[in-house]
Structure formats: structure tokens, C-alpha cells
Length: 150
Image (cartoon, rainbow, N blue to C red):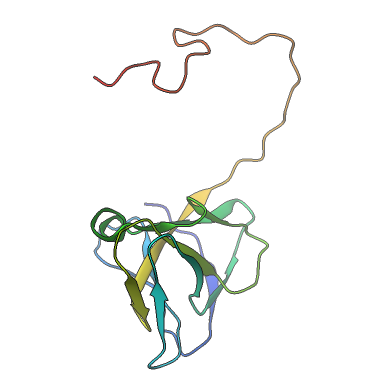
């Protein structure tokens, strides 16, 4: 694993995000709710949950990606409302997580609950070159299941 320095501003009395294990690729993000506050997420409902952190990467060549926690998604149906979150290197506001309850039961969020995960990835600025034609490949324009299931 490569390292990059990221300044983090903690608010709402939150602690520093942590990696759950030495092999974890992402940091756990926790709900920065007031003590005793609960957010009730009904089936089919979406809500924005604060994390109490703001970021400043040392370089514009890195992006923070917010992803759902696999256990919440598969066991409870709690996913990110926007699929994934992209925290650009120049954003300095509080990182918030949009959650969506795709399950059939009410889901309750309390202060400190691990609600999402955040990983940092390199970013490449691309030079777009207009072309009337593209090289052919084995796959070609086939998409949306064109390579099969097995």
C-alpha cells in the first residue's frame, strides 16, 4: 500500500476514522449525530447523515471514495443513495453520507454507528482526443451482459 497525507478536521466531537484491520482498504465512517439522537430510515427512505469530518489531501492527485458497508447492504438493504460518493480533493466541507433503505424493515442509526467506508484512490487527468473511429477489440460495442453469466 502507498501512503498519502490527508489533513482531517474533526467536528461534532467525533474521533479519527480507523481501518478495522491491518488489511482494510477503507476507513470506517461513523454517524456524527448528537448524543441520544436517532435517525430512523424507513423502507424506501433516503437521508443525509453527517460524519463530523472534513478533508484536505496533500495532493490534487487523490480522491476520497465513499462506499457502502457490505454487511449493511447485504443484511439490511442499506446502500448509498448515490451509488458511490466522490469527495474531490478541493472540497473542504463536512463529508456527509446519503443512505437509502432498500430493505423491508426500519433501520435505526445512532451516534457512532459505522455507516459507510472511505478509501483514497489516485486520480488521472485525461487529455480527451476526438476521433472519428476507435480501434476494434474482441468485445467491441457489446455491453450489458454481452459476455454472459458463466
